[in-house]
Image (cartoon, rainbow, N blue to C red; front, side, top):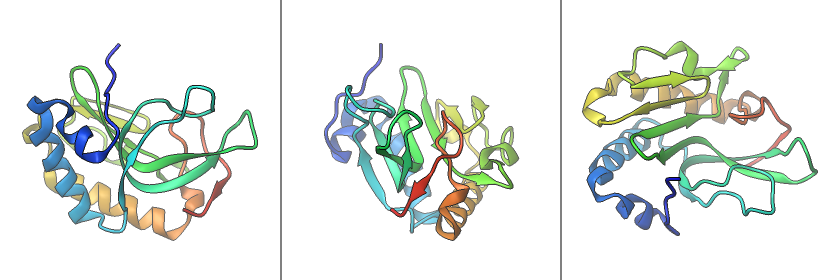
Length: 162
């Protein structure tokens, strides 16, 4: 199983030297097109707690209530994760009740897309203008009303301020 062993943003960016440049390019695009989605290192949830375990680069922090407990779990509005053979981008933002990504799927130059995420191998394969539009719209929705955010793997949850 592929697992990123990092404890900070710096370590995450440097974990896979072959894809460091890809992560940096995507990071620059996200931060320039959605500057209010503050970047942070998402550590994943500990094994004994509810939530997603994997580490990633997060942009815009929200908390959702786990379906199986009273605990609020941290999750990014936009997350970027290294996978074994590609990089995945997760979007926890809805537009008119459906994942925002649905209105962009097939136009980003992505390798694959589904529901709330898309994956790619090379940043050069992506349409940077479409991506910038996607991230800017995600930021606008995130800032307007957290009820338009959702947990990727469990539908809309009770949310609280970031």
